[in-house]
Image (cartoon, rainbow, N blue to C red; front, side, top):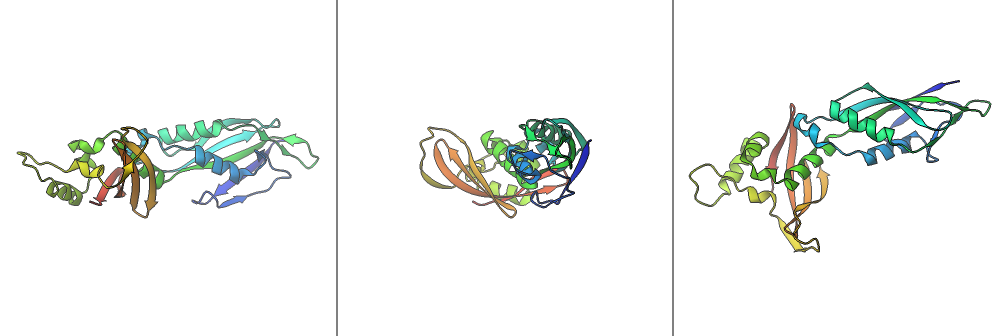
Length: 231
């Protein structure tokens, strides 16, 4: 017999409420909440979804068959085509489970309704990483699209050189409190990003020199906006 297990989550991935069956399927010897943590740990926010500033919940369905195989993965309620695809790929990559058992102790199939959540924090961290690693902050079209008017004015006032046209101090995105030069050669890339409310602290390398900056981000409609940058 097939059983159906509905896994209902609050927005916090740890808030699970499960309708019990006789003996649940087990993922690596643990329960569905641990599988959720495994999935969240495997998720990466895709650059292709940044253009739409997409976040939210992708609801999937899948079955653990009587042999412990995860199969028949489907999108039951999508959020964004790219996010849906990432969620499908990560869940489908699951290792083998221990199957559920009926009241006689026989292996049985069990079907799950399962949410995969892409948070705003994931999106903002992906935005910062792409902006810095690809040096998008040097592109004025990018600045005009993503910076608040207040920040554009701040960057313009910080530009101290003569210019016939409007110019911005774009180097401020990569200049900060510098530590000793790392052992990473002349690399220029993000090392770490942490969230502090609307502010994000990013640590990066600039030609091998390690530094830290703070940037304030928001989302307005389908656009990520850089509200402020600590200078």
